Length: 110
Image (cartoon, rainbow, N blue to C red):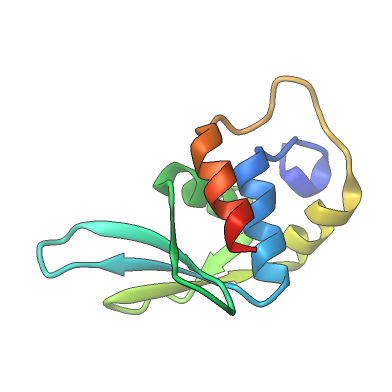
């Protein structure tokens, strides 16, 4: 079930969507070695690394879209992503699992 349709977002996923709704940019950077790093670029301050699994879950749920540009794909908040922020609906056992440390880092970026 999608987050907009009732599935619960992780704390990190919700904070990423809130940051994006507030103007932050989420990008997947690729190095010349092929490594991928997800960075949330707030309007002020340094970029914050986000776990790739968080970004993949948001993408799979249709809450963000990527423009697939090299070397950095930029993710865009979808209408479903905006709706997920305002719905407040949750289904038990459907939350994303990410580290608390990552959630704290994202919160400090917003």
